[in-house]
Image 1 (tube, helix red, strand yellow):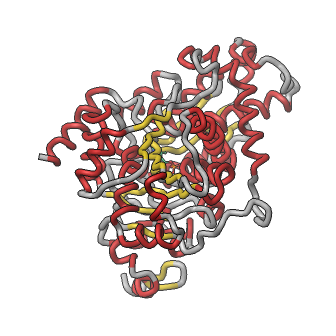
Image 2 (cartoon, protein in one colour):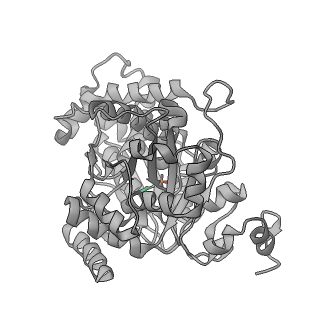
Image 3 (cartoon, protein in one colour):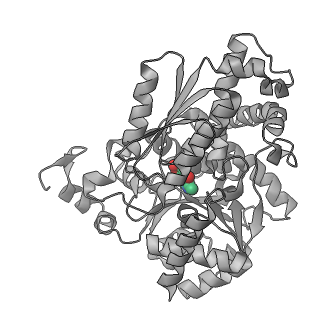
Amino acid sequence: MTDIRIGGKTAGEWEAEFPLLQELISTREVLWLNSRYEAFESGNKQMSINESDIRDAEERLRRFARYIRKAFPETERSEGIIESRVVPIPSMKQALEAMADQTMDGRFLLKCDSHLPISGSIKARGGIYEVLKHAEDLLLQHRLLTVNDDYSVLARDYFRNFFARYSISVGSTGNLGLSIGIISAKLGFQVTVHMSSDAKQWKKDLLRSKGARVVEHSSDYSAAVEQGRRQAESDPDCYFIDDENSRHLFLGYSVAALRLQKQLEDLNITVDEDHPLFVYLPCGVGGGPGGVAFGLKWVYGNHVHCFFAEPTHSPCMLLGMMTGLHDNVSVQDFGIDNVTEADGLAVGRPSGFVGRTIEPFLSGIYTVNDDNLHQLLRGMADTENIRLEPSALAGVYGPIQLLTAPAGKQYLNRHALEDKLKNATHLAWATGGGMVPEVIMDEYYRKGLELSL
Ligand SMILES: *Cc1c(COP(=O)(O)O)cnc(C)c1O
């Protein structure tokens, strides 16, 4: 192990440079602060993505709203806009305070992407967006539609037959596959989902019932993505959705920030210099939390503080950003096994595109162990009657880390936030759970219950 080089250095050399690495390797919970974090200035960045791209994505989703409404009647009430609620979780806040033996000033909110229509996870943002974008590109290219048309016509057989000539492929631990599979099959595309070994059986069954082809792999997420990529390379009519590098996925996620801004206004919640907003986002390969965080920085600038959350056994983004190696490093390179019950987060190698894009914007990343995820899962069900999958609880742990870890206190001090905490809003992004079958959810719950006895 000692003489194997990772990005030009031995593991020992990396550990000497980043003492936190030892704790990471021994899978202890940590909070890492991003040393490349900068004050937000929209003007002076040579960014490859900017606010007009986010607005463009938002408009595209609006163009498709009439189709979505027609194709998915559960979006009737939101008029074809796929959005989730933001809810205060005061009882969970008390439970968290008891769990950490720490008082928590300010408000605690939950963003319920777990209950997004159509696919019940944050992937109903990016995943669906990218398929719609691809569908629109094809239609415009073949002059079958203009952007001023009523897109509800896409539900007609004529268009389904058109899309049937094309295919879509994706690699996934589960939820991205669900999103892509459901929307692609609904439009009429032939869709193949390459599933990693940790993908749950019920997700495969559900996808097949919707008409998607599911290919099961005995390897992990990165290998499943690779298979999807290879399938598309050999077929010009096959479009590959690249979870590791996609700008479209990223933009689909980022639209959430514009929607959240409106929702907080409706709740009379102020975010400004004296009212900081802390957002905690579960992170797998990075696209979901990265896109949302990126959008939030455009909306709130320095008043929002974004933290990612990863399982102690899959801290890929932390490793990639801390070392600066991004996608040139995997958790396995450092002997970390990438085994976690939080299957949406079971990713060993981060997106380099996301890591580099959010480098100046992200405040930090913390890790949380599976036992705590299960206990929080049980707590959320008991106190708020909200059922989430284990991955989604990673964000809920955020305030504990920020308020109790030495690095958290350092962050608050450095940014002069201590006196503002009583006016603060803490928002945990609940990324999934809405489609988990009840028997599986009961198992998660029981596990949490056993752990807290
Ligand atoms: C995919 C997913 C995430 C993280 O999104 P990435 O884009 O992989 O970082 C978090 N939670 C759940 C439930 C997910 O399915």
